[in-house]
Length: 408
Image (cartoon, rainbow, N blue to C red):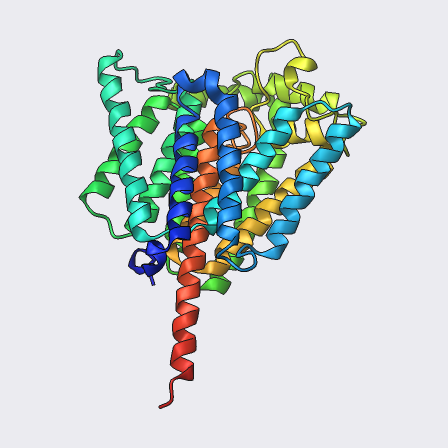
């Protein structure tokens, strides 16, 4: 059954109204976070999101008995945060922002996955994102019609591209593969804007996301589990190998050929400066691979550069070591498993987005830090997908129970 067909008469209940108001406040703050003019208020908005999410958890705890989230997922989330907390104190209480960002994305995932999302709520969110994308395109017309690194109201093109990816995923959540005119309009707007950002990582992520959604659409749980397991492992092997091999390609014949092809077909350099930063990060952590160099570490502290690492995997190893990376990947694995278990189309959208973002994070850092104000939108969509999947599964289980208990 599609979540769009699920309704909750309990919305008249005072507790649910409280939840709805709090969730609207959380969502409002998250949507404001990436906008460029809101940058001076980032810390304040972080605090607001955390406060609203904690309030929401307290309010919802009165009605929801137990935790709807998988215990393994909760344990992996707690293990990651406690490990980072240990590093924070172990390295002289440095890296507070890293801890705050980790708490933020974990709380956001849990909060949105516990909310009683309905088709109406998802459609409202879709309309908000459609209006936002329309305004971004309108702004393009009046701001010089930039067709390279366009960022609209946001700080830079790569960050704006993450917002577009979230809008595309929300469109799929709303349409449930039954495209109507507004959905087509949304996808067209997102496609145009994504091309203007000239973000190769986002374009690749979008392509992988759509392929996975189509591949998982009609698979049963066992088939989806096998496919997502295989894709997860292949992506990890691929991105980790690329992270190590890419710096060594600079100055080689193969590197020169790839550079020529990238300029010819994508109008961008293959070597963007990442190869130098990645090489320095790998050299810096040599001998400290297990625990890293501390949560506060950035490439600028070990190398004369203004660049970030542009690689979540290497930056995680730099700060919290291989142990930290394994705990983060374990969390991703548990989220993947829970989404596959739900079995409906919404959860398939969520797992497709999660897997596609694993590729994206080889070239950017959005899910955990750096471009985190943009990446929090991705965690929001994944949480919504999980909530819709759990709601759909619960309704189906209840109906099966009624059928089995009804005498013939």
